[in-house]
Length: 109
Length: 118
Image 1 (tube, rainbow over the protein chains, first blue to last red):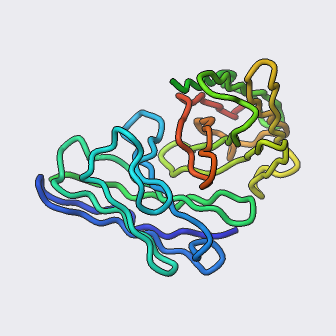
Image 2 (image 1 turned 90 degrees about the vertical axis):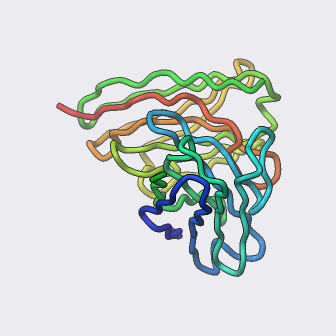
């Protein structure tokens, strides 16, 4: 099955911008399939923060943005806040199979 | 408001079986794809299984032949029947509702812990 690769960890100071990458292969992150991003705060269920590469669900701050280019996608969080400290996962779709990245732990310094 | 209430997690012996339930409300249950995702202790998210609006089902290789996803539309409830459980199945199991177009998971239940141990 497909694999989406994320960095294990990223960090940033309050107010800074951090970017989390998600790299796949032509069979998953390709032109026909979208990438979605989830935030998981400690001890809670995941929450959708970006869908279809760059769309924010209602209620998600505009500090969160997403992009996709070729076989890679990125999640950017600007104006970093302490409450953003969480695990972040990318996800896509490949012939009926849903695929998650390994997750990235964001630490706010 | 979409609500997903997950239940059924328990301690079970290796080789045993367990059925999880996910009671849904706040949306037209039979239209949307529903998915089970699990998370082993200290690990990342792992997709387990999906049932789409037509009833077609999909499984991760790790559970194929052992787990069965199903739904009762009259009860707006999703199920996951888990057989031949091993220690590697120990995880928090979440159910999630998918969006209508993009295979994203826009609403999640609270999760239920399945522990496989003797």
